[in-house]
Length: 217
Ligand SMILES: [Zn+2]
Figure 1 (cartoon, rainbow, N blue to C red):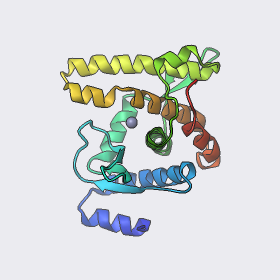
Figure 2: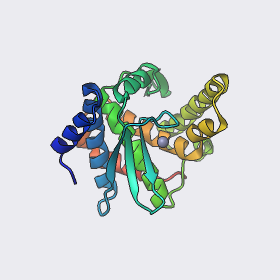
Figure 3: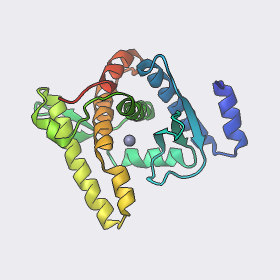
């Protein structure tokens, strides 16, 4: 396993931009620590990729044909991509008595922690027969916040589907972004975001771990 200093050196040598290297290293630390908390016995490596992800993700979980599991970070342009995603206001916070969703400003750290939780959830989906959240789960869960999060995410997915259709995206692209695994991972990501917003994420690591391991009803 390489040290952070070695990774930084390698990324510099590969010619990546300074701001991309900074974000990459911070995301790497989030992925590594959350993965270790969930998969204590078998942590996996993080792979740094220079090419673009076909679904325009800046990070992803993959299992190779030989069974090896990895997290990819797509380093080129990652800082700008994250700024853009934050600006589009895809992250919301429940507020008020009815858990209405309002645009919320997240710090980069918060954004990276919930992104990492999303990817570790993908690994969890792949390794355990956990029941995944779907729009239908909203009728079955008892917790009001969880219910609102699922309903809200359903709206976000519908909106994305319309946007992709307008943008004339390929079927493969749409399937890569709108599917049950993504919906489920997004629920986890949003729950973690709500949990850690304005707080110290490190002190909430146990709670984050249990959210990642949650099962749908
Ligand atoms: Zn995902």
